[in-house]
Amino acid sequence: MTKKIIIFICACIVGLFCNASVSHAQFKEDIYAQDPNIKPSAAAKADTTKMFSFKDFAGGLAHKNKMKIGTMFAGSVMVPGSAQIYNKDYWKLPVIYGGIGTLAGTGGYYLHKYNITQKRYDAWSADKTAFEEAYKTEYPFEAPALDLQSKKTGTWLMAGAGLIYWATLLDGVVNYESDSEPLPGRATLYSALLPGLGQIYNGEYFKLPIYWGGLMVSVHCTMNFNRNYQRFKRIHNEATTDPNYSQNISGETAKWYRDVYRRYRDYSVVATAAVYLLQVIDANVFAYMHDFEVTEDLTMHVEPALISPYNAYAINTPQMGANNAFGMRIGLTF
Image (cartoon, rainbow, N blue to C red; front, side, top):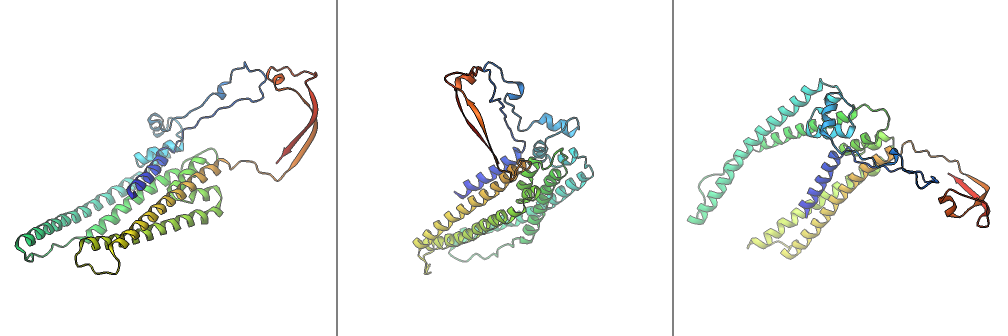
């Protein structure tokens, strides 16, 4: 269950990144057109846009055409540094490739050293088990030491390479030039890369405690429930496999708590993903609605009106007659 949830969350995040250039369709129609035989104009036809085009991406890198921020970002995910090329920040390329290459290469070297000691330890453990089962005596050779320091160093170096990669993506979005602000695509990617940054970009600072608080609570619950799940899982394994087990918690009780904490942990993971996706959607929607006119002007207009049958307007021939009626038209502006 947990693996499926994690895979689903990762798929959502990757889909969000790769679909930064969103496919959209627009349909326009004049609802007041009186002649039903008039064909819709070219502007009224459905307009669809490709999610990602390698042709547009290559043309943008060659500075032959303007690249959409979503296309630039998706290309930068696949080819680190391409956003800096499009933004003409060429001096950053040695920093990016040098930093990622050095840290990733060195981190891989240290992790390889650790893996060698891990394999030796596994081989020793297998020999020890076979020897003790065969001769019913203690294995005379000591366990080889694990190079835990190399593991720690390699992990931190790989994390540093990932941080540079993340900073490369954020830098490309920050330095993208646009004709209008706020740009919905920029707000969306801000929130995708750093939760809450899209709200800061939109000037909606009051939302930060809501989303940051939601993420912190859900992450805390995930870690806490997972810690208890691992604890009762270990107790259950000991109670069911160790004949000398003598703790107060029985195997059945440990199994019940294990399943409960696992279920709560999974719920917390889903809550974390939901809050994350919600703040991304929020940043996108309110960036689009930034120029939406909101006024406190509330007025009502009352005027006489001629009420005609619907078919009269459909054939574009409203006429005075017995089927018409006089009434009042009320318009509310808010």
